[in-house]
Image (cartoon, rainbow, N blue to C red):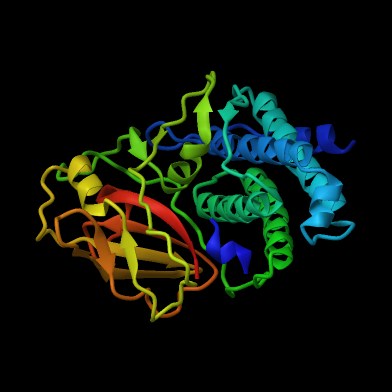
Length: 325
């Protein structure tokens, strides 16, 4: 249960087959933006596996309790991520769209098990990202290609979760994370603006440490949301959660927030979206909830919202963060 206590030759022809015209829509968004968004995540995953299989040898995995052919299968996952990078980059180029490039990343893994824990997290985020973006893809060929990648990422997730002793499929539904949301400063009127925060980008941003891309994606990260570490498993309908410096960070993000402002911890698990009103701890520093909502299971996401029914990005003030429940 390590995951719970630590926090993924036909190519050219296929690329040409989906080199359809990029469909335009309102504001700055189009299918090219979505493909570059996906490519950003695939570069991150590719680099993660490339470094991991270089840093940790086959013998290291065996010594950690993962017998053959586990290491070889991780190498195959790396090849999958490399193929996704080449495919998306080729599709963008064939459509006349400049693809993004690999940036500089850092990953907080220090041994085989922490590497695999992070692998499970990244793969789960990838599944949620593709699932959340699917509704915004207008071209059917691109939608089919994204769906084809999504199912492979889901198999990666299940394989790694199983190896870590977790349920390979803890939820009958995967969890979509929002892709396109309108966001202005808190308290202002919504507009069709694309200087926006994004849930998935908020999860990926901490790993990106440098580099420059010829493509400026219209996303920014929300302030971080940090659940306090615990030696116990998180359990739905039972475990409390304290968000370290939650109130302090929310106040810095939106100065209008006071200790009496209604703020909700919104949990995303499968198709569930479950809000729980938070309380400010003594000293006006942290936020806390008494129990994770019922029905939350597997790799769940939690963010803070100033609205208890509308969880779109215009109301989000921090997160998301990831909890294994």
